[in-house]
Length: 200
Image (cartoon, one colour):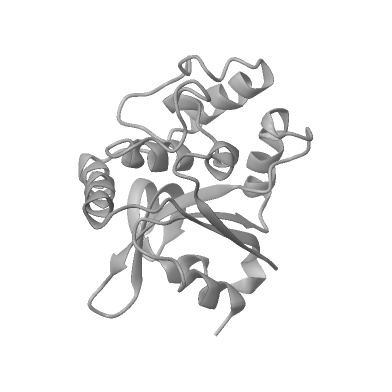
């Protein structure tokens, strides 16, 4: 078993996972967040998702907004997968598990919202992501994203919207819900989260 897979297996339902993979897209996303990191360097985090409950086959569900190719073709937007998707060491640079200490009923509410967004067909908005990167550069990320699209949400905004059914991870005074980044998620102090990291 890979170190990534073993580490991810320690995540519980309602936990948030941040990951950076060895890809050009992740490099772009990390670099685009440089203007909001404390040291002005690229963020360590390129993607984020929610951990769900185990399936009948024992694999743990995850909920995310992403664009990816699978056996069924292109998958765009809010979707369900399993933790095995991010379990290969050769693809990963680092992983972080965030535990926001949710009660069982809160976990149910957050995961129910993730499933609702999947059923609504929420898309991954590339144009909105461009608007967010511009907001970081211009320091206007506390205002609504000018390129916001209805029924569309990229990864970190999706996670934050799901948590908002209980308590947003990133408050509006930190960043508008349409401009939430993986870096904002990582630095959140809401509920004093436990952070566990794995560098590969």
